[in-house]
Length: 477
Image (tube, rainbow, N blue to C red; front, side, top):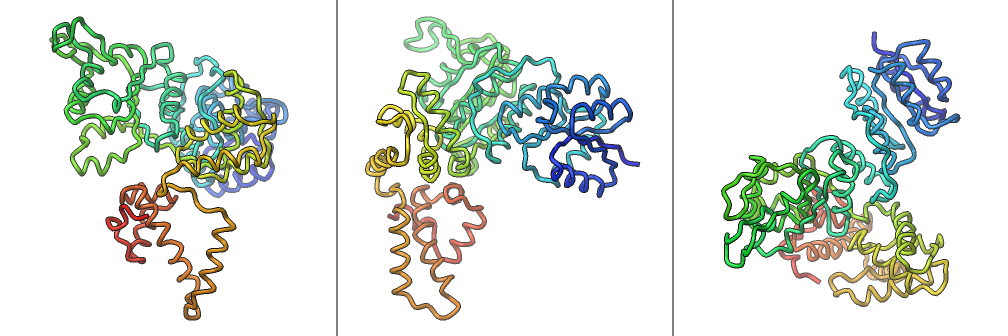
């Protein structure tokens, strides 16, 4: 007979759906809606697993898990929560939960995780000796895309696996690296960040590994490299895709052996730091072209974390803007509030520079806005200035009224055969759109698909249908 499951959930509709799904798998489910009912059930019966919400009618389901551990120390716990922040994900991880599911969740995935948790016979838990998470966590947003990022972060906090953070410029790769460091077991050590793209190729080995006195012209004294400076902490290698091949080879050797030598030295130094790398470049075609080592890629990408561009998490833009206004005020700029209409206008913008562009724009708003409450009328002039400064190939789309007018003119001119109007209009819309995306990304279909928000295979099929050669699109305006 399959294990009994305790479900602690005060939302009747969610409880009904979960119960039905688990009972269909052959599990018996006991449902309760409060911490008091939960504690009574644990005293009266034995369960193979517990699913619990966080906010319950009589308290916090996570804060009271200590009593659950006393009653059933070996029982796996899965936490469900509508408070979809990084803080919640980290708290769930620190309690020793087998898994954390932000609401709304994929029911099939939840059922699979229940099977894994019961089958494991033990928690994949992290011990609950960790101190409370400090306030001021660097990441903001509750969108589904960010929930995936939060869950990946919590999986690497109590180990030293190498992490590769992928994402467009401005998506917050260094913030994720800092979160992994601040919330992880090496938080007491230093966080050393290195922008490998900003170091001249002939100095990068000295910068990373250090050098001995006299190792080369100008080496007047011994220099301790970034690997040694990061002892006990985290070394963040940003823009790793721009590292020269020769330096890639030395980095790979260091990661494989766990030891380094300073330039010009003979002493082997054992590494004691976590490696987190990041890049905004697509490394797969670089590997094919021979400009990035495949073996280094696999050594770095033990745990890849891909950050979504801001256009794929538009639901977070309002929260981010309000967060940056608070930050701006704390840094001495005038205190501002954001009106709903202003937030809606910000959410409609493409933000090609991602979170970094939004942050800079909001700080400028805080400085230049005349009124304490920032509405759409205050935002539009600054947006117009930004549009005017963009090069033609990156110009923002025309306002909706102009686009609608152009579409109306096209419909007035064109007379496709009956039944072909939709496909003809779609082709007329897609052709300039795809040509623009390919031009902006230099003909790279992977990046063009990301820019458009399409699946890569979907883009390739539509390019074929429209007879568009990606190479011909480069430079198209």
